[in-house]
Amino acid sequence: MIYFDKVSKIYNSGKSIALEDVSFEIAPKEFVSIVGHSGAGKTTLLKMLIAEDQPSHGQVFYESLDIHRIPRSRLPHFRRKIGTVFQDFKLLPHKTAYENIAFAMEANGRHDSEIEENVPQALELVDLEDKAWNFPHELSGGEKQRVAIARAIVNQPDIIIADEPTGNLDPIATYEVVQILRKINDLGTTVIMTTHNKGVIDELGRRVITMDEGRIVRDDAEGKYVL
Amino acid sequence: MFIALKRILRAGFVGFWRNAFVSFTSIIVMVVALFVIASTLFNSYSLESALADFQDRVDINLYFVVDAKPEAIDALKSEIETLPEVASVTLTTREQALQEFRERHKDDELILQGLEQLGENPLGASLAIRARETQQYEGISNFLNERQSKETVGTPLIDRVNYQKNKDAIDRLTDLINSERRQNEIISLVLIIVAAFVMFNTVKLAIYNSREEIAVMRLVGASNYYITMPFVIVGVMQGLIAGVLVLLLLYPALIWDETLFYPFPFFNDTTIQAFLFDYFISEFATIFVVIVGGGILISAISSFLAVRKYLYV
Image (cartoon, rainbow over all chains, first blue to last red; front, top):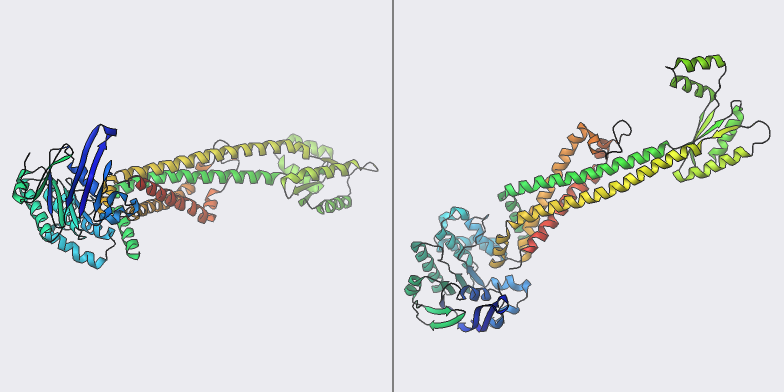
């Protein structure tokens, strides 16, 4: 479903290498964790996937589509296939939890009736029905991240990308978020997650790609956190 | 399409209210800027009406000799009236001239006594001639001078024509007004540009606050159009409210003291009155379009440009 073909990313005209000759493949319905130290290139890898950044060499394919050849005007359309979750949540501060989730659907041009049906479902999935009308600053970190996940899944994307989704969360909130991601994966959505958290990886027991200094150093089908 | 429009409008309104403080601050700044634009409007109107007033005061005075026959005077009057350049000819008879003279010097005993001693009316009749256009005075004056020079036989009818004397003063005033007008145009232009820039920067700062929000919207898959338009709607609302506020403020300001809007230093309220309040009422539609329309346009375009800057993600 996703193919990285010898992708390199070099910043500062050659002085710092974020990715070096990275090739791998992700199949539909996989749950892939990408681990590595800070600066190993995990976030850069994800940025390549949603075309937030361009590779210096190589290509990234989604199905048969070269992601970096999509014209800018078509990018929003492509991004709707991918739900994104960020370490810092990136919720819209002036919109309530409900409106944040609804915004993703509105931007997608969905009908009001669909929105009224799907947003409560998404809120239910992340167990936040009672916080629907709270603004982000009224929610805890874990709750914000659950809103962000609900927003990511509400359009029923093919892939969920989660960049350090538990990086700012306490152990209980971390556990909840990972359980939700696992539930989403069980429902048939591909999940790609980067993390530092050894406990999360070991408990998941799914595919783990280990990165170091911009290279893939391990790729285990039922990996543990080894660094 | 209709759904998108409805959502954009709603997002604009909601955004305006939830950012009430920022909206309020922007509106205050816009009110000041639009007030400046409004005063340039009033400034140039004052100048124009002053110029029109001066041009209205220009005329040629033709003085008859004291013993000119009334029939001859009437004949010349109708002759002048047939000239195409002439707009009006007003006759002041000897008696009227004397009366006006007495009226003017009623507090001056010495002059009145002198007049009594003279025994007879020393003043001749006169014609005040007004042209349709200022430039036509020269031609009328030439015609009259020619007419005067032909009166060699018998008693002369025309005593003197005073155009040349007035002309210098009129020319100087016209020059002064014209240079004042040019100056005013430059100052107005600079003020309008500064006001537009102030508004642009205010909007830019407000949207700078939302730059991360804009990036998030892009990442969530919203189209540029869908992201930009609510901000433009907020801009339209701010411009509209600011424009209406300015018009509401102008009303009492003009009643209170309209000399506030006279261009300095050419004017004061004793020489020329521009009747700005009447202008405000009679030209309200134009002023409305300039102030409210200008406010909306500048604010909406600023919003559009400012959001564009943050759509790079």
